[in-house]
Picture 1 (tube, rainbow, N blue to C red):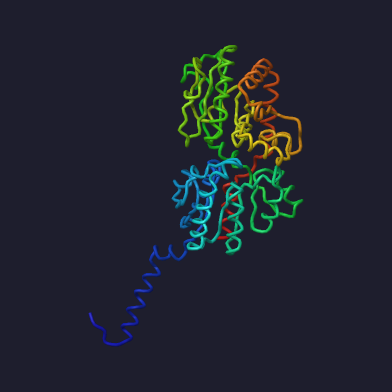
Picture 2: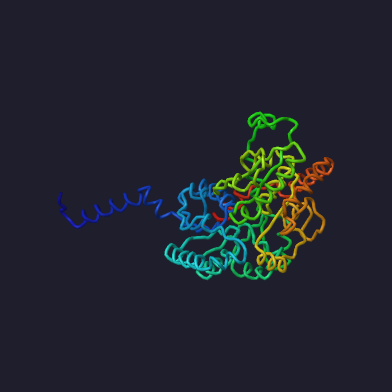
Length: 410
């Protein structure tokens, strides 16, 4: 092939360039946007996954990268670290893993500098996320913080960091809007992701469930939800099973054990010697749906249980040093989300009982459970109050709300 005139060469090159620009792959390259995400906990991975799924429906070419779990990875995100590696709780454990955490932060900063994302979505996990918010802000990258740090419970000084570094603060409890307003921060109520996620849960009737496990109609179902972190399992599962043994001696009971999917935990390894218990392992939502009463480690699970109207005994235990530091910093009378949502931030009264630290013993748990099982009126009143509290959180789909905010920056 030859060219008679320079004009022919120009025309040929122009046709190649025009074809290249019309190429869908090249257009996608030109139009692609990048979103940095940091969701350092299992619950954060779950809540963020709904946002990312909704975002990709609206803008399929977005590249998501950072830290998350299996749900975010399943949506095609490039993850530098997994949430399972980031499951570190308590002052002592943070100090013990300080070297690893510094390495993570250093590598994240290098990645952000090289990738230059168009926006950042930080989900809960306040210790690391507020540090990264400062770094991102200084680079001129818009920071969207979803699920606010619980500064209304402790470390109120973090409000200043939020005010200085966060472009959009999206909260999941309606009372947080007023709290941040009083501190000069505009917060937007996105709705609660737990309500949204439970809307997709379909479970069979109680009769079907009982037949599946050959559970008699006269047998009481008691739930055991020891948490989603290894430290929580170690501290609380033996006490829960000890309480189960005491209840088994006094009542005709069957126990439903809800294991976090990412943890390889055998309840059998924590049963007291010689205990003959009927324990069935099932999903946490099945525990909440079918139990009459449950022992639940304080955390997101108490909020989920509230949505099911499940009467519960909230328990929490940590290392003595973590506890001594924490009790001097936490300003609230109640620590469980179930009580905070049902009764309010400053309330001393409880919708559900809490057993903290030394009180979270097998003996105390079993004694309180037997009192509640003998008082069906109290159980029913508890169930009614929890379901009424659920209505405070309903009405919005946070995945759509948060994804729309992200799209404003993409």
